[in-house]
Image 1 (cartoon, rainbow, N blue to C red):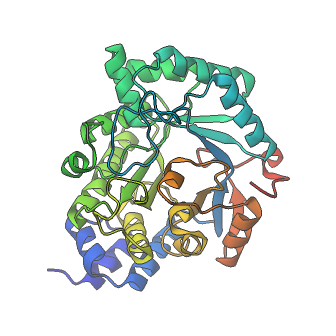
Image 2 (cartoon, helix red, strand yellow; image 1 turned 180 degrees about the vertical axis):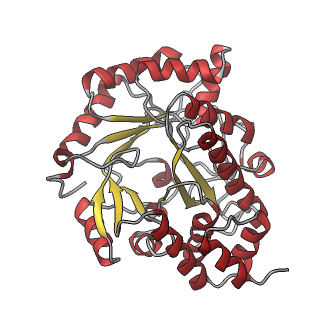
Amino acid sequence: MRPVREILCEARSGLRLTPDDAVRLLGEASLLDLGQAAHEVRCRLQQEATATYQVDRNINYTNVCIYRCAFCAFYRKVGDPDSYVLPAEEIGRKVDETLALGGTGVLLQGGVHADLPFGYYEEVLSYLRSSYPSIHRHAFSAPEIWFLVKKERSTVRDVLTRLQRAGLMSIPGGGAEILDDQVRKRIWALTKSPVREWSLVHREAHRLGMTTTATMMFGVGESLEERVHHLEVIRALQDESLALGAASFTAFIPWTFQEENTALDGQVEVSGGADYLRTLAVSRLYLDNVPHLQGSWVTQGKKVGQVSLLFGADDLGSIMIEENVVAAAGAHNRMTRDDMVALIHEAGFAPRQRGSVYDRCSEPCCRGLNAA
């Protein structure tokens, strides 16, 4: 068995980790040694001494969901007094506010609402494309898309093509949780987009020229091996897309499960800051083909989010003009643009606002935002 120090040395030099290597690092490596190695890799992948952030808004177009995920505090059933579906005009009002605050994109994501027709999704995308052509439309996670596939009795490619024609530009990584089917069966009350289906959505999106993000929500009682299996699914799919010259994952975004108001409250040992930073660092070392790693100030708070920039992250995500899903589970951290800029400066990096697909933000969208 190779010493942990040797594994870290190889990772820093650019050699690819094996799954066994990653499990050993998660379980045995010193936290500070992991952080140092991950930061070296981050600096090699991202040459600029900058850390990026985004100004956008998460718009949850409905909270009605047929699934009863044990980790979710956001979903409601049809007929619940606080259930809702947003019309396109209300979504437009939220986009107006986003643009006024210097925002460049929206993330549209909701529950999986069995009664919403396909036309609703096309209508919303078409409305945003025609009314707000400058806003980036990052929308609909794999479970939402897969349900539309079943509802329409169609294929993933055909559904994605229809959405793309309506105005879809890129796809978020939601619904990944832990990409291991045994874990997924345990934390979901119904079968929702197993690993094969989640991967197929992203594979087809890449082949249609749409970039996507990859996520991981960990700390739901999974083993270290299951956590690493998630990383391997992402790395293998990225290898495949890059080999074809297709679009690919722009970033990996891990965060910790928030238990408040969920069915798992008190049932699992919730990950703390040290486990978060350890997993973040190993993710940077393992995912050698994913260019960006995003730190999660939303679940970890501003200070741990700041430290994440020295544990492999080169981005702190959005200032979150609006966020409802993790807030429902107890994560109530908030950030203004001034907060974000100061946080990045204090960590020793130059802050730079970016667009939704890690493109440089043009001057008009970078000025004048003082509060969210």
